[in-house]
Length: 75
Image 1 (cartoon, rainbow, N blue to C red):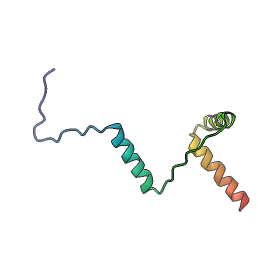
Image 2: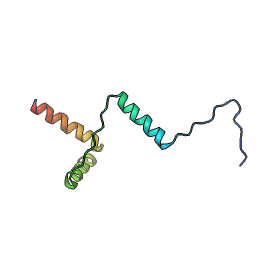
Image 3: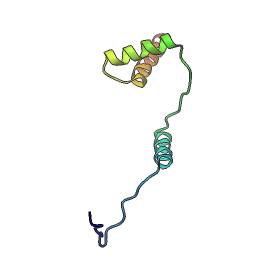
């Protein structure tokens, strides 16, 4: 196929994975999100996956809901 020249148009920017990740992390910081990195026992992780699947959402949403409910009950 012929190499078509784009007259007067800027080149499409191709980002590396590192650039996309850096931008993603900056967007999270801008939203004042905090990264949580932890290990779960296999059985707990399985239960979390099942809860997420059953409610057609992701594990983050399940954890947020559980934490907010527990917080409301405790305080």
